[in-house]
Image (cartoon, rainbow over all chains, first blue to last red; front, side, top):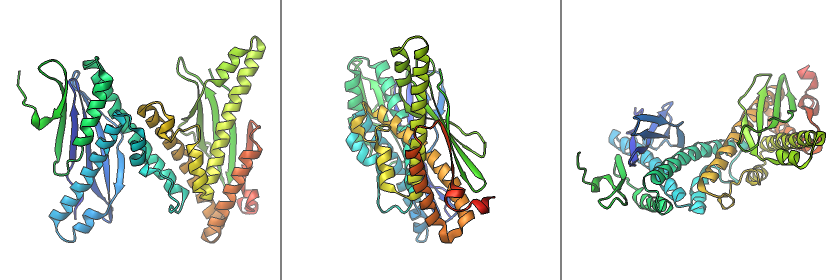
Length: 205
Length: 196
């Protein structure tokens, strides 16, 4: 029996805060499973952490089906579910930062799109509730990114926010990695820079 | 600053659902209409159902005693509008009228379409508000459906649910100008004897 899959982490590290999205698939009643996304904000200045209410990505029995073949296949399937949730969060965050609202609408409202095949209004209302959970987490992500960039890079902040959005959109699909980070920092010329954490050479003080 | 409360009561079986709405403004924040759904007198969390400063503007347009009357009238009007919208949406949900319900959610009070929102953050707020509405609607619908299932059994459940939904939509349209009203679904659906 597989109870929980691996947790997948994605972070954006700003100069004084870090935004972390983590997702995990877990079995429900041994018959189905669901993937939840959680968002945390680490305030590095005053060593404070804030976690927001989790959001449901989707129900999926795939890892349990894969368990019929092998445990390894089930773990991989569970990880794939979690990766999809974090990917979706970062892609939607990227679109929101770029103010690409029509694309965001197409992607995000899959929770609450009018679907004539739905049998009952309850399913539609349930979808709207899930969409609200995601909206809160995305709004938190936008607020952290915007406040950090306005605080540390006040000149051309809007341009930097869009640049971060564009970077994230290309960076978001990382199906192989369990933990991945983006670092937003001041480069040697004190200018805005954003890179994958693996590409940054950290120099200890 | 707070306007008068308006109440709509729905009675079904032994359950009474109260929909309470009022306009209020706190400090420098934008005015809003709050909506709360009570079940059998148990208080529930209220949500911000809509934002507008219309009652305050109306108050400022008049002077003296007239300003109080103008404020009270327009605040009540806003509260009635929201309370009746809730009853209407609840009716649509009970009827499973998905197209109309979705259309109702898309209307001016939500801006589900991102084209209408100023920024992505504004749009996320609209989505959250729609989600809060959905939560209240879902809770009220569940309470009514449970009673209907108890009273009508599975055989007539869907038929009675649809009938109840139609009744609520009609009542919301007819009584939009009343500060308080009661919808007794026990009588409307022929359960009066059972309920008594």
